[in-house]
Image (cartoon, rainbow over all chains, first blue to last red; front, side, top):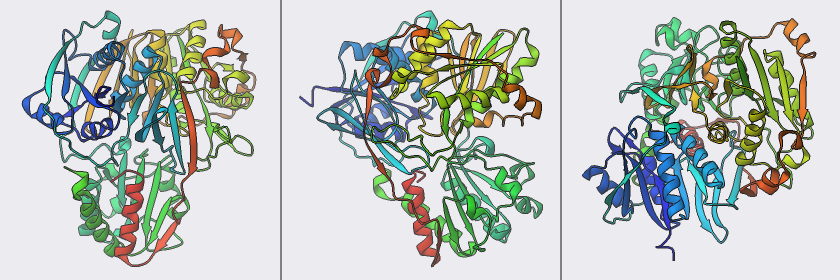
Length: 329
Length: 258
């Protein structure tokens, strides 16, 4: 029974390589049945071998006029067509911009239950059970889908990758996009070069240093920590005054106002102007020598300690955890 | 030109969320505010307004009677009028039924552009804008960092760290904006006063031509099964550097940043 149920998985390539989120989705999808991958565009041998390694025997490669210019619409049309033809056990998508929009449109078309931003999905007598972690991280919510095919966007950062090799075959899937699906045009798409830090104002993760960092050398180490976390590097007013970081990376009311999911403030006491520049950060972690520093009043987690000790230790710990075998197969 | 801004009331403190036994959001004794991204959406409408004729900005919300406060806030920030969909049968609505209700409202008012926040600080359901667009069969430009309106063409830029995209569509369209599109300007005192006089229409399900079968708990395609409280970490740590570094990394891993 379980082998018969297809599970539709929307695959993504970053720079032509199957992204980690796709491999994690395939790992999760195997809990429900046989993964069936939907890929917008052609699949090379490398792509097929990676998808096969994570247990996807069928890879639907979408082609047709307009598919390249309208990837979102193409994925919606393909997922709906496949789900109508053979109702799958679930449709799993990555929780990014495109994934959210595709999931929403598919759920409306199929009149099916949508669960966004799940951190875990597992099968149950009633179908699919998804765990979500609402912003703030204070609760865990378990939900089920009671109508239609469960459509689920998953945040896969914490999902360990487990391979289960099979032979993947590409099955071209021809699409003829209806005119209304071509309404949104992609004007420009530029990849942010690897190693290039994201834009401070829109970055999901921001790491910043202040006077407490103490030296340019240690500030460079803060920059390395930002790179390890895939975040942007900023500095307090004092850090820019001392020339440790460029003026445009100054986080305060007159500089840059940031909106990250994670803000890591290192050696920043947290003046009123600085705190005003972090109005809605998801989680704030602060490290400072002074236990009375105002930054601790807004921090979700504070550490009282010397940056000279804590930053190298934290950098080493982060690198150690990132290189742990189960996170990258 | 008519712009409709979809807004939602959320708890003032994101960490102060609790749930009723029916898994709805606990409202008693809690303070609420207009969702931050929605405030930015109202402000984006205002930035477009000076360049267009016959501008009308309508704020639309769905929620219990107290949610009218969110509309008032949107009107302080610059919306001209408000529509409040309020019906006891709406309690327990999921994204699907919320989108149906909002789409039903939008079919009854004229619009050239629908603006809304790209996500809410209480549930993170960022699906509603795209669902509304799908129901109305208009283009959706989601998670915009910047919004530019040309003569009849709308252009947004967005980025998710790895790629930056510029997308374009013709009006009418649905656009969801992220908070980084620009902080709302601080309202003048006069705006706060005059917002009290601006009209709010309160519509029930019957007014928008819907029955209770497809909304609320009855129409929801998802069910919340359990809500568990996560233990909060101790707020301020001190100790050996290697020890606190490990605890910091634990925190980052727990919040899925590692």
